[in-house]
Image (cartoon, rainbow, N blue to C red; front, top):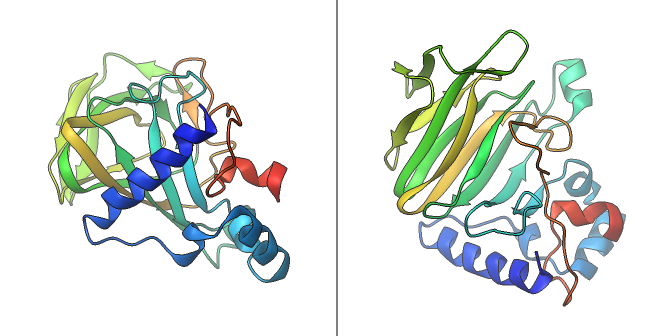
Amino acid sequence: MKRSEINTILLESDRFIRSFGFVLPPFAYWSPDEMKSRIASDSARIRDMRMGWDITDYGQGNFPDLGLFLFTLRNGSASNVAAGRGVLYAEKIMISRQNQISPMHRHNDKTEDIINRGGATLAIELFAANADGSIDDEAEVQVLCDGRLRTVAPGGILALAPGESVTLLPHHWHAFWGEGGDVLIGEVSNVNDDLNDNIFRDKIGRFADVDEDTAPVHLLVADYDSYL
């Protein structure tokens, strides 16, 4: 992805989020220089917990069809998990555009609630996992939706209207997209590790390859290692 495209997506996404009365935290709007200064003084947790902007085309160069906008609002750490105390949770806000696929994947550790916060319908394709973690294309999938147990055929589509949610366990393979329009999505989970806990069905990357055709307006979490 070109950095200029990423900058445009950042601004468009912020407007979309604000249209639902949701406002990102102050650190979302720090310039790269301010981020670097604040990380050095009192805000290293933002870098270390990889909180912030995240725009990905999964390394495939086709963001409109295969991509996702994310912002990690809060997150804990592996040390919190090991101690069993502290910040043991994470929260994200995401945007899935109309017919834009977030590809089939699962997690080894993360359990997550995926919430339609507003907009169009959120469509989620579901499979169960075999004992070895691979996709089971014969087993029905059982998921909790706002306290109700629902059963979906293998490869079936779960449609979530605004306000509805689903709890996805580590053995739930899932892909999702906006149906009928763009969707604002909330994610509440245990500690999030995007570097190690995304298992994709296809051989794709988690982060975008960035062509630095202009300077960044704000840093992505994928920029932290090189910029900070």
